[in-house]
Every structure is written in structure tokens, then in C-alpha cells.
Image (cartoon, rainbow, N blue to C red; front, top):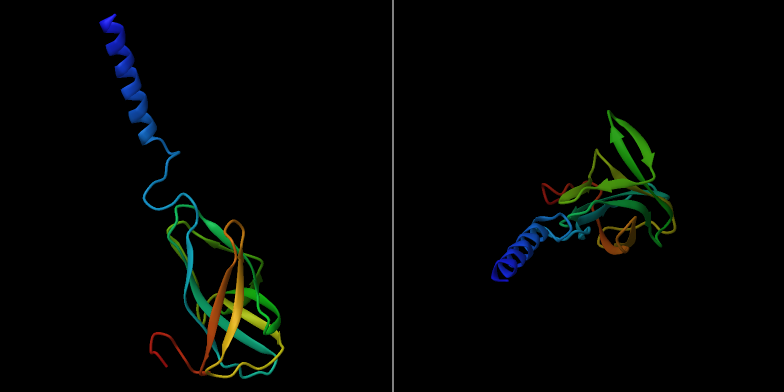
Length: 155
């Protein structure tokens, strides 16, 4: 009888150890996307009907997500573009890798605010809603900077 109890205890201990090593439990970080936005800005538009927007979406979670739509009350529509080899191409979504970033920057991927309802001026903010495939939406206040602002220089 004692041998049976020891055997049962050993089997249970082994099963618990294996369960602790399985991929079903949370790892370092979450098993879902954990999104945040850094450095949003819009250079003061030169045109009365179009503007660009830039920001970084950081995912600290253990699952990927996708940016699927962007909207703003300041524009009739907001589209997403990638720039490769000097050519701009509209995209319907952008992947955000687990433990990674999606960067919209001058000269690269960016947001285009089209059919502006008003021309944003330096010092104002534009409210932007980011919609994702899996995570809930994020609302971001995007400050309007000078037309020549570049974040690495601060002006």
C-alpha cells in the first residue's frame, strides 16, 4: 500500500512539473498583446486638405496584433501607408509583433489625414482612434508640431 502511495505521489509531482513547463501558462509578459503609443505628432500641414501623422505603437505582450484602421474627427479619412524604395503604398493593416514595435516615421510608414475638416495649427492637438484586430481601440492625442519638426532633434 505504501508503495502505491509513493508511486501516486511521484506521478502527481511529475504531472505538476510538466504542467509548469507547458506552453499553456503565461510566460514573461502576457500571452496577449499589451499595446501603448509613444511620440505621436503631426507636422503642421502645408496643404489645407491633407496632413501626415507619426507615432510608435509598442507591444509589450506575448501575442502579436494588427493595426487595422485609423480614424480622426479632424479628417474625412485616415489611411495608412508604407514607403519602400521611395514609393508610397496604401496598406489596409500593419502587423505589430509580440514584444515589438510598429513605427510610423517621416520617410517611412506613416498615416495620411485626408479631406481635412480644418487645417491643424502648431500647438493644437488632433484626436486619433487606432483600431486593432484583437485588442480594444486606443485613443491618442496627437500634438501638432512645426512643419519642420523632427523628433530626434526636438524641433
